Length: 254
Image 1: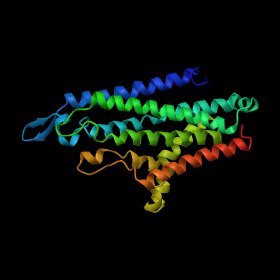
Image 2 (image 1 turned 90 degrees about the horizontal axis):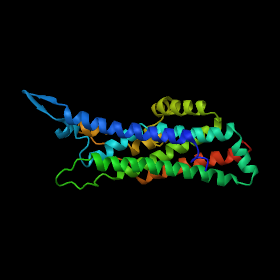
Image 3 (image 1 turned 30 degrees about the vertical axis):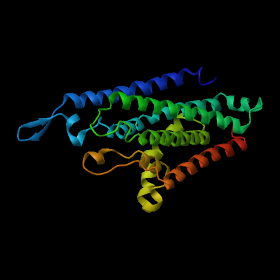
Image 4 (image 1 turned 60 degrees about the vertical axis):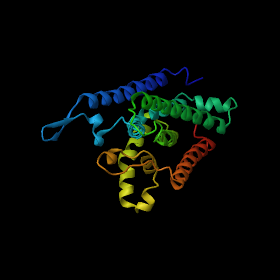
């Protein structure tokens, strides 16, 4: 009820769609109408050039999933705003006084996170179907596992944002810490830690699920890592973040 009547929620959700979808269409048009000089006076359209087949199946699933991951911060803003508002306006405390259990409070937020992630994944799926270019001999849904990788990575990212906000209670500080950790702290930690450990840091788990597809453009490989060890790490981090939130509520951090 609180989410449905929250104007900020709808504004940011609309902004997510209005940025993600036009960005995808914009790249599509840019590649469709631009030319690349490949020497000897020859020019090719990037959409037909193997190295830049951005919207051809199966690459479109990976490329748009990676593009969508750049807009995840907007959905994190929604979670941070909802959680911080409950601390600022004491509605969380009032809910618990009125009889909600701490587990019910967390379940409510997890439902929001799952529904937000499902909505964003649906937007991704529709864009892939609309913008995808068929290639003879390749099935349309080859590579669709990136849609699942997108959903899982978003759930983990939003739970991390939820945990940070529960720790600091203030929206601005939580978003600052989220960006600081994502862009700076984990990169420094990953540089100093052995690769066998660094690959299982939270953002590294997310990054391995949705690696930069540029490697495919230059002849390398960049596949979604949905291996059992990575999925186990994903599950452990979600459990840890939710566990921290529960302990904070149990200690009366209301």
